[in-house]
Length: 264
Image (cartoon, rainbow, N blue to C red; front, side, top):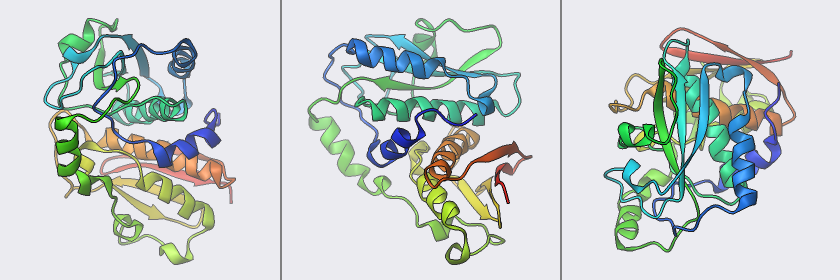
């Protein structure tokens, strides 16, 4: 099944950014409905994962990042017994986050520095489920002193590595790759990741792109690299669709993550 509203999500890739200062206003009804529809989507690749729209105020869910004024939050939840659940949580979670961005809402992926026990008070978890990450959801507020300082400190992390640095040694050269692959990888390059570590590496084939984990990228407790790769997979697929190409994902064994193959 194709990703719903992929053309709007493709545009959202360019404008989505992490927001930590919110104005505290409750979500408008049209935004609530849009987010409920997005959370209700059950994408084929994301079996065992779901995203829950949780009510606020939610400031107590977040720690260490001075996130304030949050009227609601998203919880990326997964069945810990399901295979590839971390990738699935990242893939589905980024679909909902991009939907929020396309609707004019602000978000910020938080996986390592939130209070799971506080988040769980607003989320009905099944016995085998876990909250892998959360995101504040609301309207961006005026950047206050802490926010301005934080943005200054992380200005470098707003950039991304050139695509050439993200290709594996056995990849087809970018210059000779098909157009759809270049569009898809440019979208994947802009995916969020914990501390902007970009732990993915790509291998371009004649009709495929393989996603693998970079073993040298930074380890962050509570923020699995597989979840970051799931976010990049969502971006990659949206980019391919925007380029007029459809494909299928197949999960692989670590250190590989998955391969996206299009019709020859």
